[in-house]
Length: 239
Image (cartoon, rainbow, N blue to C red; front, side, top):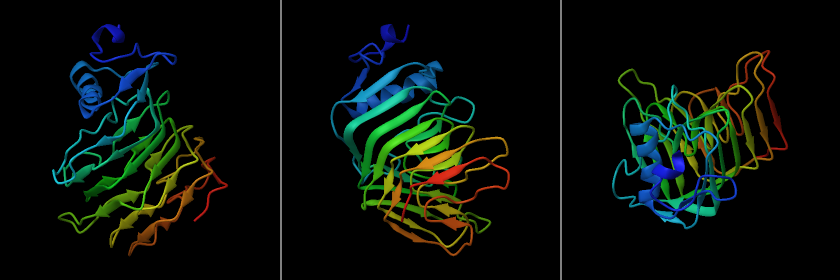
């Protein structure tokens, strides 16, 4: 059972979630996902304090989840803030707090502030591949998302809340007030690619008040690419 191996407080249920009080607790989520292949499906986490990373240290956090092993738990920020995240040019890694959020996964009630995400690949503060639900998450004006050019001259894909929206994923009530900056490739102020025929993605009740600078034409203040035939919706969202 997960509860027997979790070193902190809580049993991982909705009524008694795993409590996240320190950066070490965040590292424990990563270690148990990475080292023990735990997806945390059906498990719940709740932050009890604001967490402040040392922003002067590059790559000071570990991205949780991956394409083939998504995070399936529900992470509740509980109205708290994570600050000081610093991701810089880690080739082959998604620049996000969560790389892949599974269909059963969720991230909610979380604010990221005073953080920097820099890469020439896939860059976004919260979730890169979203199969689940992102609810009431916010990036403040002190969050920057920047695309650097790779050896071929491309700067990747940059988004304010999440990158790829897949299957029946949802982004609800989220805001981005920071800066997205690059000279190239595709960008969205809130969401990235809402795509794929026969898939249904939703972006609703979101607000973009940040700065978006790009030299590329595949850009949207709320959402980037929306493919013909895909049953996706962007509603009640503004910039």
